[in-house]
Image 1 (tube, rainbow, N blue to C red):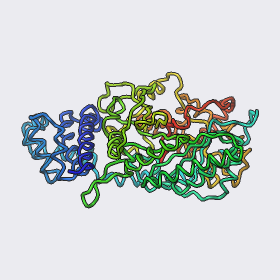
Image 2: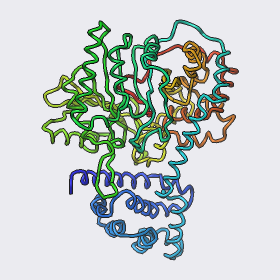
Image 3: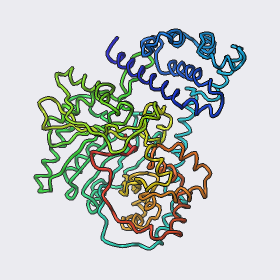
Image 4: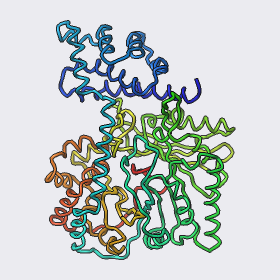
Length: 570
């Protein structure tokens, strides 16, 4: 068996174990919602069978099922590996005694137990055939959201803001500003917020936009979709923008498919820093943020049965090897949290272990310099009683290059977009910190107050692209900045209280469902404001009831270059 196939077996075995634990520790009972508890075990086993058929090639099922070491489950393992359809599997499950409690409840009628389990599965099961339908629904909702952006409801909201008192004060200085050249991305990662991606037309020269942004900040982040086609824009910005002293760009690593390609871009950035120095511009820090996790580097089975990576780990190895030859450029790997983050398993298995192996194959050794947990504990999705710190930051280096550290920042996925379709066992959330807020505790962390500038002229919130302040084609920058200062909704989102939820409930009846599904406070706030009509209502009510909420001053952002926690990422 080749290396990637062994990796696939290990990954699927771990995913299987986590999924079964998640279902047995409350997820399946929640689906049944008060129906007989004896259905939990047989439905979990049926779920496992369906998951195996969808996720694991038939020839690898025995290897994946070796995760079960209990001889009492040997008949179940045989059924899982060999059953050809759901109905025969369910009959075998009942005959082997794995639904004994259900059979007993039905007076010993095994046929009735088979029927009830199959009917329950059709009603509550996680059917793979339903997932494409769910994905299309998510994409349609996202498209509707973008179609309404800066439409009639948003224009009415902005007109209302324009008539509110302006607190005035000196021109704002933002902690950072974002630049979105494009939203398109062909990677199709399963966790990504953006299932539907709007077209972004270049309506102004990048130099014109940079000159404007230079008056507002000294830190820029290029983000959006796959920026491979816009690398030259970033390089030119580094070389020529005088007032910006920190440049960061978020990439997925596809441009580094060869060592020569990675080296060429690092060479170009080093040359840009030289050009900058030659024209007496201030020194600048350049940070390359590369997405690197179990989703971007996901192992997939092709139509031919071969195993491949969505974005190869070899690309990341190319970037690390190039980075040590260019110490003026910072490299940070942006990772998404999962159960491995609770321990050193984060470094000893999964995508980090695959990266270390690839570098070892090249004669390099990846060393862990440091690792530290975040301030907020996370709840283990597979054991709800376990709430513990998780690793959020680490530093690596290649042996012999301790002076060139490689950063790793691990943040939440959150339930944005199609990430809501992931199994909860695959990722971590921040419910443990959201729940005290919902119970009326002190206000939690809200939206980032900084702004995103799109190449097509739109200006939106850094935390939510659906919260817009205008379009530079129609609105002068001073008007947009004035709206940013006056907007009562932005102020409420930055310092959220339960009042915002109550105002939402005045016009929508799904607040309870939204709070139940929310994975963090920022995610809840993001969800509450996706609808343009709701944004208009909230702005009206906040402006009428609490005019002082519009007086907001800039404060340092919790999101820093090289240590970013946004889910809106490549």
